[in-house]
Image 1 (tube, rainbow, N blue to C red):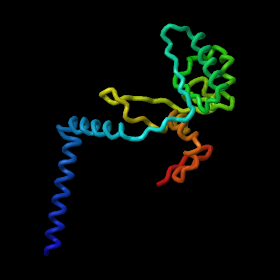
Image 2: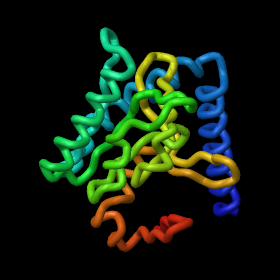
Image 3: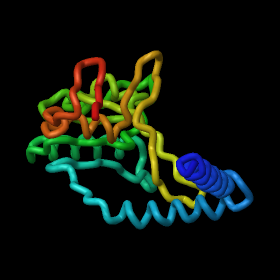
Length: 190
């Protein structure tokens, strides 16, 4: 008899807890719950260790007062200098726009050099770059970036995000016991 009463009491406590949680998440106080969740996430995320990429350079040029040819030439000089300096990775988050009717610049051939160059997947330089991935950055309603998609379906093929492509091109990632990669697929395990 005692065990039945204890079991009934535990069910009532669980039901009450779930009801309160559902009310917080989906009820009229949901906006406060989301705000508290974001605040907690921001506090905890700032305490996590952040190990920078070793000998990697992210290249992005703001094109306020320059024309397209000048910006393209600047990218070419940057890739040349970084390649000669021994950079291990060059990441071009916003490569110069190159219309389909124009020839690729001469420096684009250097993107197939020993130094891996990463560009966005749908950019014209993606076919010449060593590696590519999509960039889809969307901030939350308060303007802070807290999450980003890691995979995207492009023309029937799953493509990694640019940060994920960079992360997988790392000796530590490929030798990690929880991760293995092949040409067409990447697997994670517990």
